[in-house]
Amino acid sequence: MIITRFAPSPTGTLHIGSVRTILFNWLYAKANNGKFLLRIEDTDKERSKPEFVENIFITLNNLGLDYDDEVVYQSQREKRHQEVAYKLLKDGRAYKCYCTEKELSDERDFARAHNQTPTYSRKCRNLTEDRDGPFTIRLKTELTGALHFKDLIQGDCSVKNEHMDDMILLRSNGVPTYMFAVVIDDYDMNITTVIRGTEHLNNAYRQLQIYKACEFTPPDFAHVSLIHAEDGTKLSKRNGAKSVEEYQKEGFLKEAILNYLLRLGWSYGENEIISMQDCCKIFDIKNVRSSSARFSLDKMLNINSIYIRNLSNLDLVEKLQTFDNKNRYSKEGWKRVELGMDGLKSRSRTLSELLLMSDIYGYEDNYYEKIMETTDIKNIEKFIDETLTNPWNTNNAEIWLKNFLEKTNLKLKNIAPALRLAITKSKVSPCLFEILQNLGPDLVLKRLKNAITTIL
RNA sequence: GUCCCCAUCGUCUAGCGGUCAGGACAUCGCCCUUUCACGGCGAAAACACGGGUUCAAGUCCCGUUGGGGAUACCA
Image (cartoon, rainbow, N blue to C red):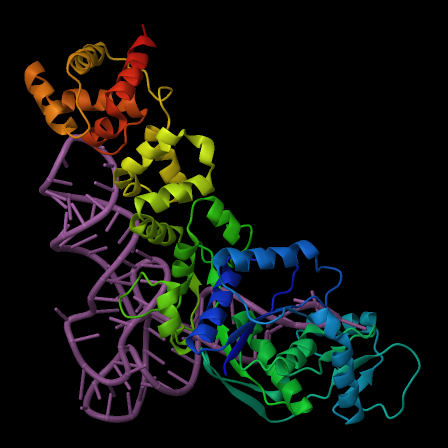
């Protein structure tokens, strides 16, 4: 059975890049009837914060990317990690290193100053006797040969062992390092496929050495390329890396966010719009592209607008009510919004845009723009007169308006801009007939009267 | 510096030895239209460069260049 996992360290909020990694893990598990597990890597006691753990749960929940089994907290497995470290020590696969942090950083500084590679000198590697004082446990990395593995996404990967360092497994305070804990935990959790960002590709080599030393069979690795910001630089808070919550606050639907992230690196013929449900059936990690991609807000907006258009009018009203609040409009107001939704949704790329445009219908008489041109005022007065004497009814606004134009010898383009502005407060709106129809004569009259009296 | 990974229109991508190099977003034009969208039609737009291998290379190999990542008792 395929078992994947997402293993974040709770040292910050999850951004859109991590979400893509989660998505691929989740999809790969679902596509193979496997499991997707969650492990919180909280071995860094300084930087790990409970609110970030909370943020991980919220994000997964918001997106509907559910995990299986119990959450594993790495910090609670310290004993096991120590056990394995000491076993390696006993077996001669690891050694005690008494070097202080100061010594090590001096070594590195020296190496860098002389344009050399800053790796550990291994001076404790061949110590024959134990000394007093604190020590770390380091792995006796293989000195010669090379390491090869086949990454599910990146293909054949290899390094020469001479470039590897004797990495620290256990810190001098007994706490395992990330590099070591990951291996033990993935092994103990029976993870079959490690899907993570390419920033970990180099770690795969290191971890493979640990697997070897422990005599564990390693999992498959799949290193997903990173997403870059629109300007090509690394995605970070500075250049607009946002959390899922922020995008949702801006009116993006989770389905659209996921769909967009999926298509960034994965494709299925010429299909652009793919639901996660469908994708569960067809997803294959091998089709994920190995190169990195840039984030494009335009494209995500486009996908979001498609998802919005595909939603039913009633669904959209409900979405708007939870997005903003139910009391934004009266009950009748919401009814009018639903009535006019067809014209609204084709003009909106996000829920925020949709909400803003819904105001045209949702609010009652406090929604108008004053008219400045005197010819416009005259025309609108004619319009008001006609409406008063002979209003349109619930299904003939278009015919009514055409009759009115004929009667008054006006062209639609003479009166439409002013009418639109007076009724909707905007130069952009759905079709005028539609608006008259959905608003009804009473509301239109109210707004028009306000629009012309304001200036008088 | 060293190590690792990557490289098709501006962007996301299809391609898996023989294609007029296809699609989507964005851009521009036309149609629809009172406006703005939606929709329809169309245009412009790419195989980073240099060597090989092959009858044939975007596709395979090697360099160069460019981009990214890693070089911690962080993860």
